[in-house]
Length: 281
Image (cartoon, rainbow, N blue to C red; front, side):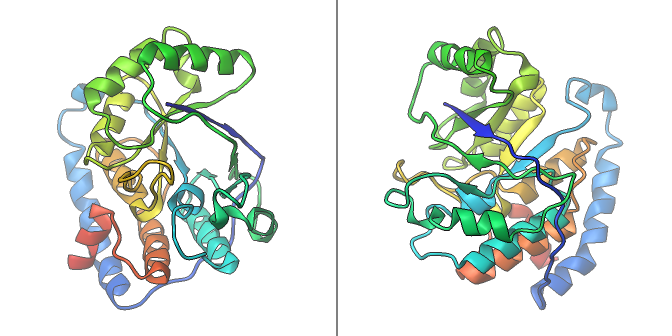
């Protein structure tokens, strides 16, 4: 289902912070992991000619990743997370949502967060505005997307917010929407409830989409969709795109550090397979 964003010119952040223990092991192992990625790219470049050369990752962790947390995450923690994500080189970080605190208490500090983050040219910091959710036929999605595009929305994010979609469904939806809206104006936002987020994203990339939403450590879940687990993990997305030779500009090591930081605060294990594997290396 379609969602849309208002973008605000923002910028790169300073900030950063590290971790010990497992992160030290991860840092030592990461160069070996990236060397293996380089060897993967040697496999027939002709077979990936349909993929975009560059993908813009929209990091939604600070908003979509935290909005469903039962305990309020302190504002300074949100600010530090955003700073660390910016340090990792993510070009877009969705920082918060202008939604009533009555419905999403976690976003009640949106003004403080926006004022507290470090900004400089090069990174955008959009906020979420109300969106459409629920199972909608591809033709209806295309109709709504067409109206939004005609109203001046420059980027329309097609979201499987409850994570039940498959690559076949993604293909049908994009095929319908692309008849009405240029693919350059489309993004995808996939949840991983059934383990299909990465596969659905790959299908979208093959169809020409070059903007992908994801969440550090796979955090997230739709407050209004029972059982909807987290988003596509940004770490896993970056790993896949690197293996395909697609440029993102994201530093995977710094991204892993940001994921480790927020998982320690939330006292939970990262949902990112790459983060889990890196800690074991």
